[in-house]
Amino acid sequence: MTFHNPTASLFIPDGESPDAALSRVTHLGVGAHQDDLEFMAYHGIEACYRRPERWFGGVTCTNGSGSARTGLYADYSDEEMCAVRRKEQDQAAVVGEYAAMIQLDYPSSVIKDPANPAPVEDLGAVLRATAPEVVYTHNLADKHATHIAVTANLLKAVRSLPAAERPAKVLGCEVWRGLDWMLDDEKTVLDVSRRPNLSAAVGGLFDSQIAGGKRYDLAVEGRRLANATFFESHAVDAAGQVWFAMDLTPLVEDDTLDPAAYAAGFIQRFEESVRAALKGYF
Image 1 (cartoon, rainbow, N blue to C red):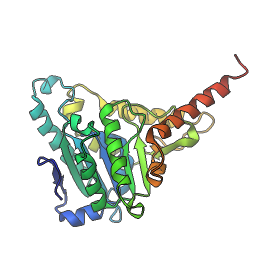
Image 2: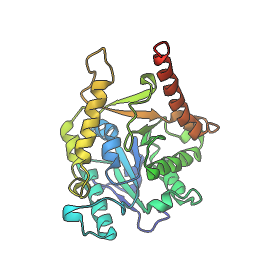
Image 3: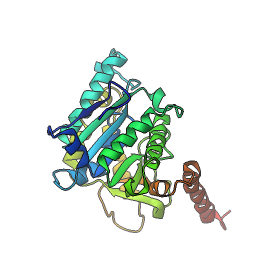
């Protein structure tokens, strides 16, 4: 597979041929930065782990050059940090036994440039090669600009495919903003409590981020636990750890839907539910 960016990479942990490796992907994660997949798309990683009929494939779109750093990594240049983060992402693919790990290695500025068609075309090529059943990506209410840009590029890529070749399910997952605020019947609830050892293993590999100044490992586990406990007030927890997602499938089933209006609809319905709950008290 040839990408626009000459520094992009395709890593296949088990040494399978590229065509065979990509064609076996059933669950695809498309994230902005190294470690996004292991946190937001763990549901897909676990669903495929050591199941010969299911395979997880990963795409990381940026090079990670702008990450925070301290301690051991405080004096690392952007180039050195990029190299470390790429290695960590490939190591996670080994531990998680991914079918393939693609790193497009774009600067965030390119991903966030809607006039540049290259990221959309690269993601379209990945989708055609993998034909996944399920795609995990960032949600439309995420507060990180690069995350939103990745989702926009992905939706454009999916919409460039014939209807019959599009994934059956596209989920926009939590990362830089939780989705607890969504109405419960509109949340996609992902049970991520299985194989906590695997979760800790793939998520803990990103030492450049965790030891480098951001305790993502603790934050992610805390959110998973909080989601599970606070999801339902009048019932015992159905799962030990839960991750929420926004269902983006309607946007790939109907090209006339405006993504901004679609996202705003969730917010408007949340506002209406708050107003309804307070009505009569004030």
